[in-house]
Length: 78
Length: 246
Image (cartoon, rainbow over the protein chains, first blue to last red):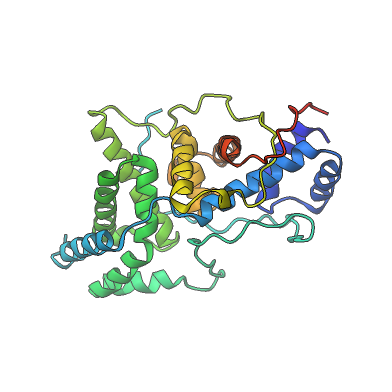
């Protein structure tokens, strides 16, 4: 397997959507390719960081204000 | 391509082909679960949102209150990611929930309420962008005709727990700045798929894209973000040499 072929499977690998055979091939490639190992690990970390850090938080006061406005309109039938 | 979405009711089942292997955690550690993803109901199991929607249809406004509180943060985040403007995101959040309430009769329950709501919010966000751009049509395909980021270039490894080197505020700035630099067509796919927990099929349906297009954009978005974050998170051991195709 080449690095390009590995890269083509990267998303499916990260999403846990590869066959047993493909997984074995990818694992074999990783044994001898530090670059692909770094790409896999840092891409996984990228996703985890964006999942675990709320970069656009909704402040409580704003949330309550918007919520009140939405529900007031809904109660009037919008 | 001009991007405009109608709001069809579609069947969006969790997709896992029969031939896909069971998880092998020992070989490749899995990503941590998404905070926002909803539990997947079995085929005959009713999603809890369906009961809430039925109550709202029956005149119980308090049930809608529950739905708003359940999804307001996600909708606000999606709107911020698309509009990149706080005031617009506030307006989009209000408008999306009001529009969903008005159109609740059109929701047929064969897609998840959350997915249906996200589709409305994405539409509202793009309409808001269009207004800001004085009526120019806004396309989800903007700026995606680039080969940038399709192949990793910076192959430096990251420091262990690299986010520990920054305060929460610094880290949030880095993450915001980095994702804002992505072409919109990549950014939206990454946000819906990886941050907000939609499946590939749901993301495709929501954005009016094909599944292969979503997959292609997701890979490039992930690789571009990885590459850009490497500038901040690289290991102090020093960068590795550029990769050579084997």
